[in-house]
Length: 255
Image 1: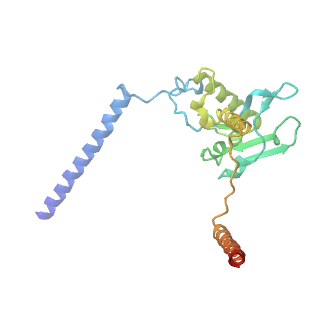
Image 2: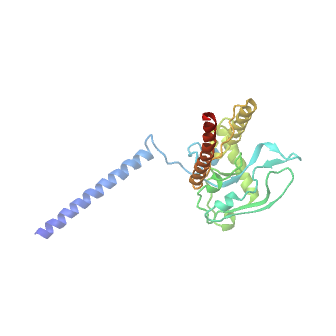
Image 3: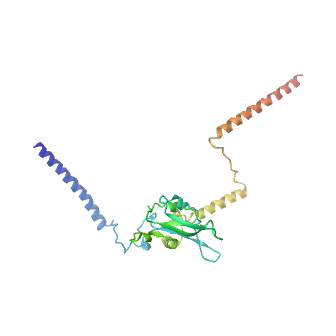
């Protein structure tokens, strides 16, 4: 009887936990499916990248290369922001970024003749975009969500494809912020150039007015004790050298 009672007790407890779990599941199902807090959307109707106001600002989708919004080359063509520093390729944990670079007149750094990203092993960490040092971000993580493909070759993004994706992302950023690239999207690097320029101008004004103090060089922590000991030794030597001179003066006065 005791064994039967224990089995019955465990069965009742299991049924209670099952009902409790299902109640939570169904409550949230109806809340999101038919309630005011619904978050489920049908793909293709209001999830297109051009109407993605529902998407979070820091969503990391496909990569994209950008043009400078104001600068152009001498022939009038659009200026590409990538300077070929290879920072993105070096920081990539999957080593999936390759590029061919060359020196070209009118372009800062090295011009990317080809730029390729293999999405097959990509973990979408976003480090390549975060480390990009250019004032106007050369490499962005866009909001493009259509990544899946039945062919692995389609997951290799060439430079032309990356520039196209970057253009679409920049257009979306301007549209979301009424045509202006403001501090609200400074995490993508669009506002850093103006901030750096303002800082340079402020420092230049202080130097011109003579208010800027000369930079003080600090000795490294490992060298500082040796420097302090040397300074104390030199001070003691100087003090010892001054004492005889004071004695001679006093002797001359007494005589």
